[in-house]
Length: 447
Image (cartoon, rainbow, N blue to C red; front, side, top):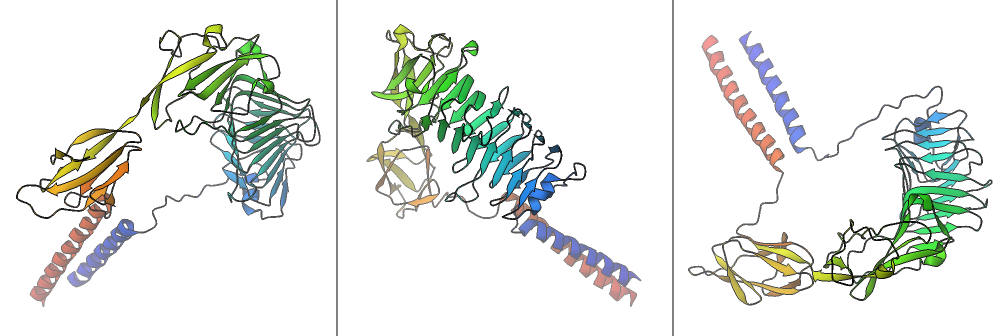
């Protein structure tokens, strides 16, 4: 009897160790999950999209709410058939095929439509807004990624609204008045880094801010390749403005009514330009410089006074047609790990061995070397940000950098959780061996 109980305990413990081993050392580190698709009446759009293959067309036959994140796959067409489609919060419709919206389309706050490409070398998804007297209301986000296309107006003049908390991002192409002229787009805030085409007779109206291009990362990269054709309209009752980064082909000629502007200049180059309608009001909002890796910029007026977002200066004011930026090279931290066996040498100067930290200016070259400390003859391997670095060579500062040696270089192995679980497995095995010994001992006593 005792033998059977002992064997059962042994089997159970071995099974436990097996489970621990699988959990600890499984190569599958993904956090996979399966979503339960909730049926919206007799028709479930999410399931239909999931089962569709290239060449299929899914046409709605009733008003529908998308229940979970779904993708219109390449070669697949989703046509709402004039019915309403609702995309609620925390749900995303990814368009890699074709989506024709002719009914009422609603995207709630935190909901989204993403027009993208599954292959960056191939044309991406296309969305057509062809709603006529129906509405498209985006209070979540609509994002057109590179190779993706958003066309407004296919067969009938159409209206696209992205207001309230809505966010429009166009890194691909957006056409207003694609085939049906006199289409209208109303946007509270939008960002265009790809291409925006506005046909004659169509309207692209901004209620708050339109950003054209992106903040640069280097002062040597100020060319703005965003393409805007046609005219943007500023809704003057809400004090809107246009912020253009870098040296751009966009100009006052791309604004429907007469405008004024303020230009931000640094190192004799145009960093950004802000436009407002001549009859409207709009205070200067300083362009972002947080992405710059090489310089910091401080904007000043002609008297040398620093300008802030609270300065309440009107765009295009006579004294602020051009605002100059005072630039300073950014510095980054260079840290040297403590190693008593060596002396760190930077640009020929010994800085010690106790774990030194110094600043390096962006773009500056620094020669890094080591020599044995008194009482030592060998020199270890140097690592720069974890990569072997040849002693006596130079590097150029582009960010924070850390130098270590093979004497203090951290072991690259399993993470701490895996090591802890491995130790638990070893303890469990030792426990099993002790238990087996006890079982065998008791077994001898009973025989």
